[in-house]
Image 1 (spheres, helix red, strand yellow):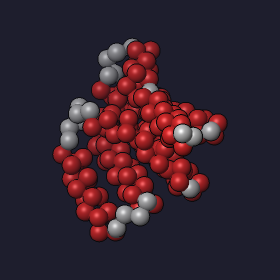
Image 2 (cartoon, helix red, strand yellow):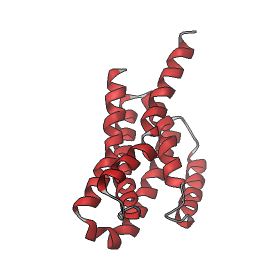
Image 3 (spheres, rainbow, N blue to C red):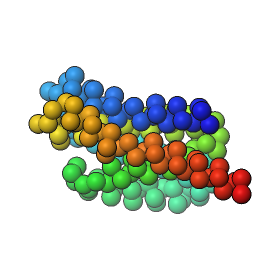
Image 4 (tube, rainbow, N blue to C red):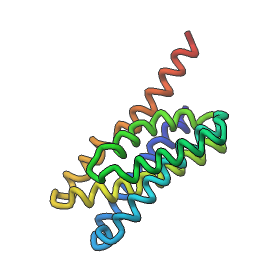
Length: 162
């Protein structure tokens, strides 16, 4: 349980690492914006597909779902809350990754990497605010990942003990 908690906190720090990258190299944000979005969307699709594959989804379904998700994410605007909602839901996916140690390590690493462009793009949109305000906003907007990850685990543990 303690490993789960510390790992979820470490995974969440990916968003702050992305924000830090944006503060360190703000001149790279504008030319790299499309690459950040592509990396972010690719990671999101791969995380979902890896989890579905680990739980036995059929390969044809995975391919169709991957193509559909990629097309959907390609046509969403950067200002849409899709990635914020996706990060929130990754808290549930994080719990489901505990099926095996290898899956847990893989998904945790990918969620951490997903946080890098997520944090960078968030800072790029809010660059006119002060750094302190931005970092507080990051916690308020994306901190629900940790809450969802921990609450999902606690609910399942509670149900298992009934």
